[in-house]
View 1 (spheres, rainbow, N blue to C red):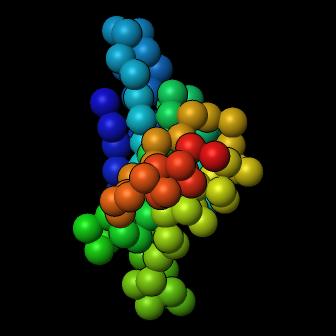
View 2 (tube, rainbow, N blue to C red):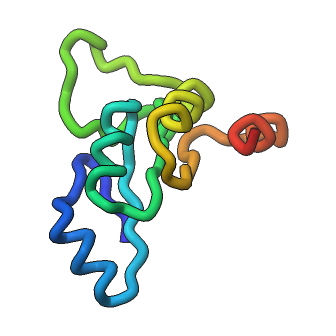
Length: 103
């Protein structure tokens, strides 16, 4: 099951695990990824701004003016922030981009 626009509670994730369900949660910043890890989720979906021109942010930040973080930068930030597996989402169109997110 995947969640976006917020992090489920630990209780929700635990209930999914009890029935053998894998839980993935979207994150658009390193701070959001840390919250995902604390929820007990199995993986974090790092969603860059290239994902259809939008990001599933957990809360609006008026200081950014709607600008988001590009996928390659976000994956690097999330990799430093958490130990969960990372699913890269948003704007992967060429082989070089695939190689970059796998590095």
